[in-house]
Image (tube, rainbow over all chains, first blue to last red):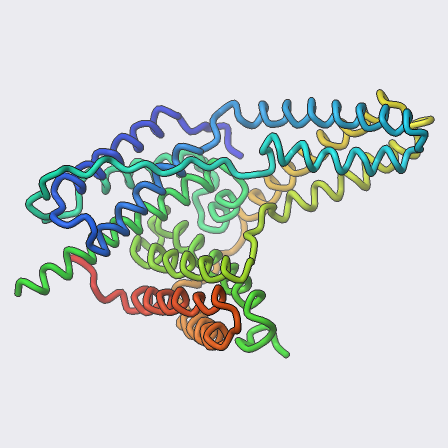
Length: 201
Length: 189
């Protein structure tokens, strides 16, 4: 991977822009239960939740450290247990494998960290109706893409390398997933506005 | 029985294969959009909706999403074979607590190192790879996807269990999104 690290202030800025756009939708939409609007809100909330779980700068070393400590503890403990029970190396290995699987399930190292999506509270009075896709969402997407490209590094800006980088780097994969959800939300809103314009004509 | 036969195998493996192909096409189109090689943020978003519905249908068949990727599996296998096994054979009496802990930690670090190396190697090799045409532009992708989804929906509709019959509705949504992705009809501006 490139030495360029994603600046995590950017992440906060993108999340703030998404929150702005979300807020604008909730304030101006006349019917939040309309299919396209509801879909867009769901995608936006999901995108925000994905961005909340982008692994930070220190999460890699911390993960290695936790895995090391847990592995050492479990291996030593299972060896001691097998010795006390009078078993040999095979018993110790089987015990260690079982305990490791349980320990990693409990500590959640093998699971994906999930954050429940949150939505802003709907206002009492319905708004005047959506007339355009909130500009904040488009700006959020631009910043998100530039953040991802910076994270991937200049050497990987050709398509085959970028594809590999997206699947190889967990942080970049999360950014791509959030970008996909954001694009889906914008697309849903555009389809809603398109339906509206057809009704009026 | 060829690999592309939409009627090959049960519904669950067909859905899994479909999901893999769609994920590849989406990722490729997204990369092309990011690098402005083929700027289109609508097409891959709609294919993403197709994939989402297909995943919902697959969840009704209890198809679990994959938790590991290729380099991880390869790195763990290599670390086990190249580091843990020789150490277990070479160290005298490895069943004592301290040596066993040491061997386990060495294997874990080796697995991390091999995985990082593999990923870097794959990216480095891809830097000089020739660019292939985008799968999202391939009309055959849409035809195959549509046929697979239709045949899966037909099997799901005839299923005995309620839960799996619900997959047919999800797959119909997937078909809607697929035609929206192919035609890109309602686009603003």
